[in-house]
Image 1 (spheres, rainbow, N blue to C red):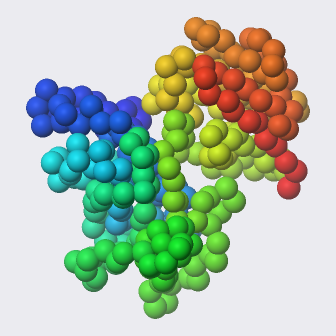
Image 2: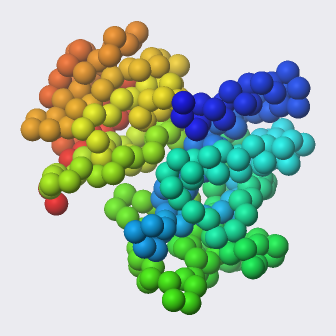
Length: 288
């Protein structure tokens, strides 16, 4: 069972208690959980073959209405989210430099249903320090701003540690500064060896790398890419990469549309437009 599914089930068990009002919010806790997973993936820093460090200090910025609804439960919700991050890191063999913390903050520039996640890697020796706010000015709070070790930046390497990579891996977003996306990607498998073609899809401006031969899209948390759309079935369709790449409907209720044509199976080319429910997906591939 996936980490997100376990998280959902734990929260469902609390719906009749403390968390009853949480689920009335436009922002759902499972959306935040998925965003924290992406934040870890996008900011993972390889120190050596046995150690990949990910952020351990997170701030989730919410709109005023969402913050008002969620803040009474911020302590327990923060603990649940931190536990989910710990479980996900164990699954992915990530490590931390200090305790995991997840805090909710209000952001007046966000509309209801939108949120941002900021993160940093905070070493144990300084984990009790208050989180540093992003720098003031026109770019405040945007990724790539601030000092190394601040939110959205990798940690400064301790003495004797291997050098840190200067940039995030291809497809990653520095700082992981993300608005919520209806699609939540499951942890990627190791890249296939020997291939020179890169494959990915784009959903609402977010890139999802395809690093395995098949990719299942659907509304279920067990899908490889989760699409939060009522018109999408739990296991809606499957993309198979190759020469050529193809897409196959998996018996969905509403079917798929590829480049304007309703179909059950189609060949994909770079730039193909796939519509499932009310969600548009752009298929991309490139050499090198």
